[in-house]
Length: 200
Image (cartoon, helix red, strand yellow):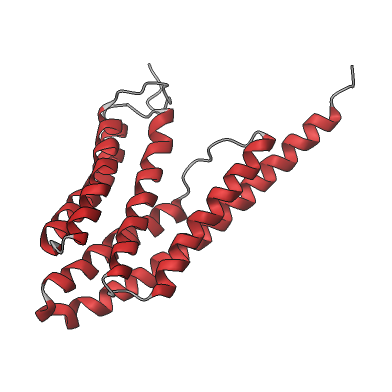
């Protein structure tokens, strides 16, 4: 009986296509917000958020978990979160400090990944803390935009959006440090193995 959790090297899978579509939505979303089409931008953001849950579900149901998908899915999430936060910052919906805090986490992880890759540390599996952080942020960001599109209900949406955003931001950084500590542990382990090899 085949192992349903086997990770393949396939590139063209249905979940990967969904992730590519989510990536393609990023420039469309930013262009709509730049043009002041907040309602259409909200719709695109909502569709993109829904695809985040669809591709993971399809990967498991269709047994199409791939190495590319393990990189592509979280990358698409981070890029869409960054794009949405920047758009909200430009529109003065969220303060600059929130934009910098969220972007700073991904910059830190990017630098850390580049450094640790020199010690042979590859892509780390997604942690549940990171999944919860992404879930919270991908709920908060559409609520912020919905409050912009329909200011009549802003007083209802704003407290929930801020609660999810702050919780998601905290978890986002917590998961980021988890990745860095795990990468550091693997790098040290790899260095110890290398130093234990006999010199030829």
